[in-house]
Image (cartoon, rainbow, N blue to C red; front, side, top):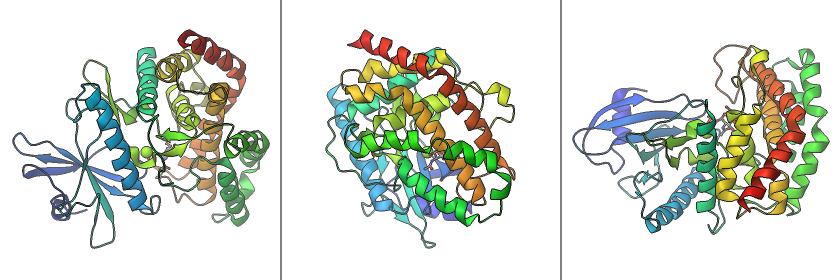
Length: 366
Ligand code: GN1
Ligand code: MG
């Protein structure tokens, strides 16, 4: 995108100061993100082009973000915290809208850049895993009394019944002609269908409640201050009503993996029990008082559920010819599939110990 175009988009928003530069930021798979630097004392800003294919309901998404950040802001103020640092601030356009649509029909949104923060691309210590759990636990706890509804930004995002329907259609269509070489990988998904649907049935029948969840809880979505304290959770695009398990399971999938999400060396990939324990400790330090028995009982299972779902999603995108996730090389989605499957196997092998760990930590906070 040309600098001049970016500048004209940035100035559609109610920003303080004048723009000095606009540069790309970060490595998200989905949106395009820029940092807008301003002169003098004015804050800097984050400008994001929201991916329209993935987030078609921009009104719903931005409405969710505004409602949730507004709710947290009131909590932060009541607790004597700093409302410009402990929650994201959405910057409206000059005419008061939550986003701007450019001449090409692209949707743009802006938030205040929070300065002097530390973010991590991977949780590489037990302290950090504990703090990450605390951060997501606190986020959920701040929203425990949020009045629904929230828009369902991505239909059926972590709904495995919906994912299996997409899966069946994608495998049947075989758009890229890749199914013939994937018998083993496809069996990984199909063989776990019933246990995954059994869990989801409990969400459908209300045994497992839904709450406000973030739905993308990797550590890079938490901002810390320089002293290592959690400031706030960012990337709220996928905030939705869902089981708390989505957030817990996705955090374990990313934090407690000893390797990378797309590791080619499968011997590096596996579940770290100490990291699992540390994250669970931080999380339950904030959420033990809120969660019901069914939520506690399926916390460990959620790591299986979300990691399985990620295997399915990466493989489905590979079968579909790589249309969803940005890839860096031709079989990237297949490499991701294998790495996540290795993690899934490791979680399955540790499952009994994971359940014991949850119960022990829960008992400590009750
Ligand atoms: C996507 O773009 P990013 O990194 O925030 C995806 C997540 C996946 C993740 C896998 C909206 O998140 O669900 O778990 O990639 N987000 C969406 O790395 O699909
Ligand atoms: Mg995200």
